[in-house]
Length: 231
Image (cartoon, rainbow, N blue to C red; front, side):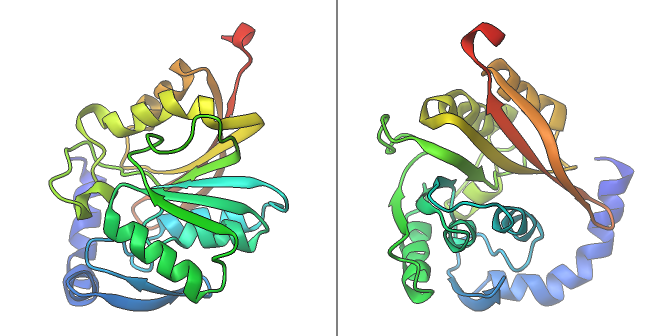
């Protein structure tokens, strides 16, 4: 573990235990980015961490009118709601069945149910192969360990970041011509390694936005698929 990570862990120790941990140990109802959300126990809590809010703000400034968006690992549905509020028709999927239920409930409660379809899927496994999207958005798990329960699916990407590698290999077939992938990565992640997954899958990447926090930076990356002759 690097010195910066140790310092960050020490700095956030008290706020985490005094404020965040009690929220994570019970179902919560919060307002995030103007959306009133229910957050059950096993679902990623978007109010307590920066990543979803940063990616959500980036998505909101896009013109998504008439666009189809796939929100991978939707969790509470926050990013799906951001895309829908920007004009998109959204498919939102998650492996955690509790997340699927609450994302649909949050879509209905915020009056976006007519623009959001939610169902359970292990990455693209349950997404029809002929269903194409203008954008695929994802706040992926960051840590290179294996998930131990449904709650840890939002955090743990498997040995060698297996989940991200599988995503990169499968995403190509779900994009419309000119379609794009948007993901957010922490400086805690081996970014070069993750980007190599997309390069191997014949994507070109660019860092579209970076926000610096005290001990961490979070960057939105955009991926565009190359033509076959550009490999």
